[in-house]
Image (cartoon, rainbow, N blue to C red; front, side, top):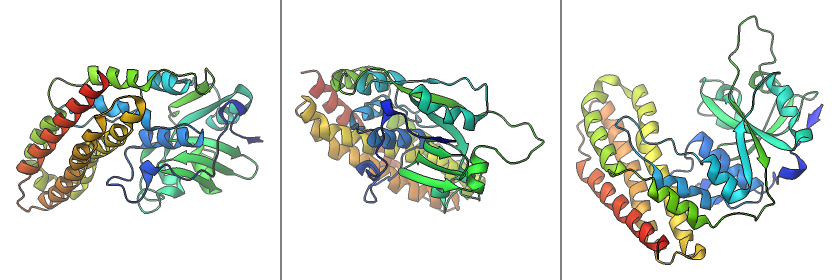
Length: 321
């Protein structure tokens, strides 16, 4: 049986990756879920940049930076798409195949071990949870076209069996988290994107999150040398990489603000890109700290915090005129 993208959610697999995933970016990828939505919206013919308003309410809780994700309400109001959890009462492959007749697509949590597009990182080398959207599946040919990270990809054979847990096993397998994506209103019947921008600005933390990150990084200078390089990689992903990627997509949004009716907001973009670049510079230094070398990132983190605050104040002023 072959399942294809439903008619109400027609996709264009040949559009290529969105510019937010171009190779000249400071952070070519953000996190698996946000990257997924950037590319899914792109293949559906939508502009994902208004969704980047979610970056403006990001925080740091003392341990990690917000894992920035599009709010389901934003996806509904900006693009007319309803995203809710799917109750799995049959095998995952059967559920995905049912999408065409039901007029929906699915997001599916899978193991990166089976995803060829992660070659060089997790493919056949590490078991890491991530999320994909199957666009087309062919059970007979054991092939699938799917959205993941920075684009549209294909897999087949053993990878197909592995992703859908089709191999023989006597072990109990935890069912993945699956969402259904359904169009609720015609494309274009959406709210003013500035409404979403204002809402996220209203939810931003009272304390500058980059200042909070700076305190966390300063503490890590002390404990990282004993924790080692492997811990550094997962810590850096949850902190500096997420901060840097968040700032970069916020810069994309800022550049778009004049076209949305918020003149002046674009001047926040250079400041946010400095935050993004600063996060990468600090990450390199912290890699050295994890190897026992002395580093000082105080000035860089302080400048990042100053730029973040100034940028968000500029955006806030531009959308409330």
